Length: 121
Image (cartoon, rainbow, N blue to C red; front, side):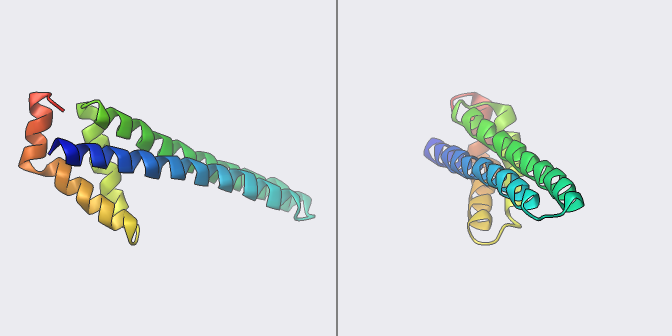
């Protein structure tokens, strides 16, 4: 079961890193696109919206990265964080659903609970 826990941690670190890059892309691309709109109100509103969404996405993905590293270290708080993130991941088609279900299976199984209860992860 330790191998499965490490795989879940690595998957969440990778997805989180990609999410941080995506959030930064929204921030930079949305801001640049808004500034090039030619409208003062559009530039201000578009920049504010894209900055808000980009920063929010990057922060949420950063939490996923931190929880992934915490899971690698066997931290109980990281297990709960990944369970919550994986629950939301079930609504993400294809890979999010697959990895969310896999993560939930690993972390909610009796062997997964035992690994964290014994502190041997």
